[in-house]
Length: 473
Image (cartoon, rainbow, N blue to C red; front, side, top):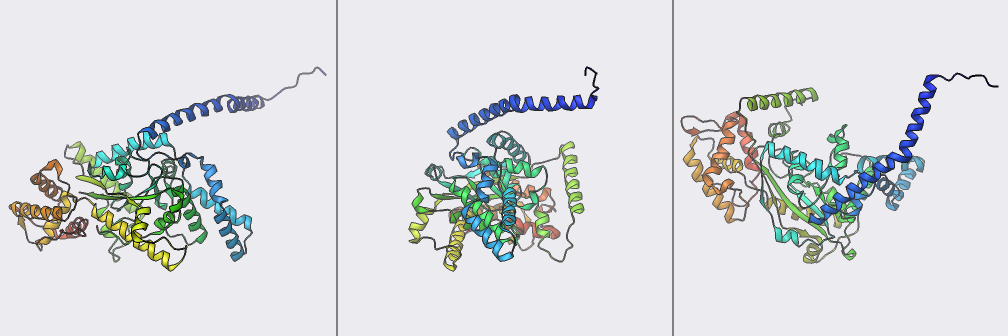
């Protein structure tokens, strides 16, 4: 009865670990959660006092709750039942599939990470690569946006840096929520992107149910007042021009708009332009279907070589930033005012009339975006050089033509960014960027286009080719 019972050391250790975990779970972890939640709430309260577009409660809802709301949304359940009936699958299996789609889409926004970590990262990256400038904004128009409006920034898509650049420049106004493609679904990048409030989409998904789940999430976010940012072009411009519109996300957002609800839907056109787009050669190469596709290993090797070359230039003190990156914010477009001016309201879903209305709205928004695209130095010089029909020209001739082009563009209302308010300096910057990359050569005081890089000159000229007054006489 009183014999000693030997207990293995591993069992004692296991009991100790379980006891320690129980103590942590009951005592320490709740205290840490309370402390962190209090700190985050304090940050959010401070942010909402200075942000022009406040962070709405929808974005602060726990991700698990949003996933459940989306999964069991009445419209989604109805679509799931229809899918089950059409395919013969059990309804429970279809609902599990819906939950899987919801988990892939729904973000987990963290205001502290967005404004403390994300903002710092965006600022460092944007300002390290480019001379970042806010060219134009309409402060009166922005201040007229109703406090509880659903706001959407509508932008052209030039580079993958667009996300970073606009997020950095808009940080004093709002926390933006982007739609991000499947390219970013790699660990740990996808976790970081979700934390910053972005949501994932599959543009080529063949599943109507997946598209329905995405549509309902976008509608819920829009109705909840989440400030969103979209690229109606659907992808990066391959040749520098504005691409054809892809209006799926736009139609989802409009689907959440109810003029009688009292919450307006406001679109803010945003124009972006660069003196150098880091992906320019890759984008142009993708237009030539005869060239072999670059594999993942080759693409990685090219990236490493590029980074290595930049490091060598930096160590030799010959590295330069990649010119100016300029962003313009145009006059907000209120859906309430737009529909009143058109004298109409949106037709029912999935009707030809509604598709036509969305197309008209998309064209109107993209015209507004195109109008506010900044005219940067490289775009000006490229436009002039192309107009010379491959004839070498002197710097004096380039300046005279650029000055005339500036005057023509400004007369038509284009937003010409003039660094240091100096026209001579602007021409020097544009020409210097092109000669530094050997896109334009310098021979005996004349500047011919490098024949092999003529498409690159066209790429930068195309960025402003749509603007009235962009034609050189």
